[in-house]
Structure formats: C-alpha cells, structure tokens
Amino acid sequence: RYLLSLVLCVAVGATSAQAAATRAEFDDHLKGVVARLNVEATGPEGVSVLANLIQSEFSTSTDEMRQGLTDGLSWGSIAVFAYIRATTGETFQALLNLQADKDVWTYADKAGMSVDKMSRSLDRLVKQVEAERNTRIFERLRADRRVSRMPDLGSGFGILQETLDFRR
Image (cartoon, rainbow, N blue to C red; front, side, top):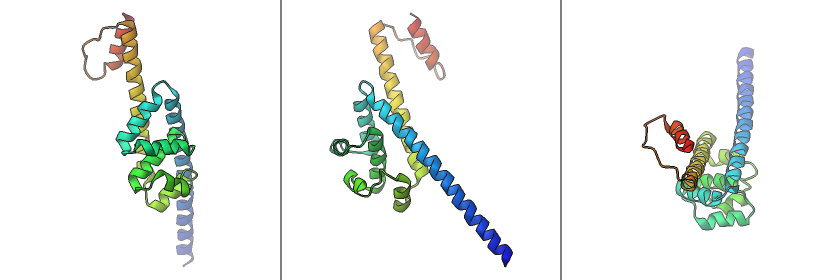
C-alpha cells in the first residue's frame, strides 16, 4: 500500500516537473520566434512579406492584422494570434480580452491546442519569411550587378551556384 502511494507520488511529481520544463522551453522558444519575426518585419519590405505569408498560411484578414497593430501587438505576436485564430476561430480582439498574449501556454491548454504543433507551424513561418527575404536579396543583387544566372546545377549546388554568380 505504501509502495503504491510512493510510486504514485513520484509519477505525479515527475509529470509536474516535466510539464514545467516543457512549459519553460515552450515560453523560451516562443519568445525567440516572436523576436525573429519582429526583426524580419523591420527590414525593407519585411512587413509586406510577413503580412502576405501570415495571410496565406493562416488565412488572416488584413483588417484583423491592422487591428492587432492598432492594439499594440508586434508582428511576432500577430503571427501567434493568427495561428490561434486559425486553430480556434477566436478573433484577435477576443484573444486580447482573454489575455492570450500574456500566457500563450495556459490559453493553448484551456483551448485544447497542441503547443508542439504551434511551435512547428511558427518555425515553418519563420523559415518561409527568411527564405523569401533571402530570395529578394539575391534577386536585387543580381539586378544591381547584372549577374547572369547560371543554369540550375541540381540539388545541393544552390550555395555553390550563388557563389559562382557573385564572382563574376
């Protein structure tokens, strides 16, 4: 009987410690993603690229994004809200009223959302924004330097190809 109680206490304690570590990791990861998206939004054409990708990825309207900016949300927070809105159907205003921006983990838990899926989706968005930024930079450099494009050398030669293009 005592052994069963001890095993139960250890199991509950381990689960609580694991959840706390997971929550701290999620919070740190989310802060990093939000910061990276905010940095991307500060670059030239960054806001338009980010807004277009949020709109296509999460079907968020421009009016809702404008309202989020008016309410003082950063572009990273708008991306998080757009994901939550796409998942739950809540409007940005309702999310602000529920203070979802203050504690995303608790809101996601109450809404029955998977924070792992949210993390992966937001990571994918960051990668898309960075890829779009890099593509625009290379296109601008090609146009400025009049670098002719080389034929595609196949998978794995993208960086080599870009290096060869810039040496000319």
